[in-house]
Image (cartoon, rainbow, N blue to C red; front, side, top):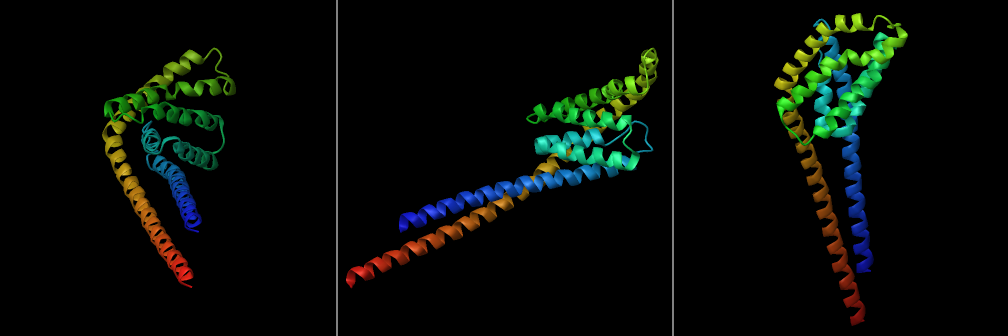
Length: 222
């Protein structure tokens, strides 16, 4: 009986750990989706500023903190853009442009250099206009007009790049630290709750074992 009870306790402990891990994954996924809506709101607030946007900063931040779950943020943001402004050719470009930024940022999670991240943000900002060309070339018939299109777009790409460098350099490190602290506190609290439940389980198991030994002792006396 003791072995059976011990086996049940171990199985329950494994199930509890699995539930806690699943809970954390679900929590972070929902949080990333909410952050995607926040990105859209920030983008609207900054719309009057030419080629200055918060999307690059936020997607890099979410990727560095939550990893691949940043795709949930990008998906929500891109969907909201389409629902509000229409599913035009530029929206189709967003479908691959913003996930590309996440792919570029994922291998950099182990680094903490603001110079590295600001360089990535700046290069992405400069390349942003060029990334529309595969779709715009066919939808707007840029054949014979490609060079003028690129030359006209370069000044805006330079503004975009410069803004990204400044925003990422100044805001990414403190925001990342703040997010990691908040996430660390949540994880620590979840771990404490899990350990407390495990301690309760161990106490209950010990009490069951003591009761079983007392029953066996009583049976032998009879």
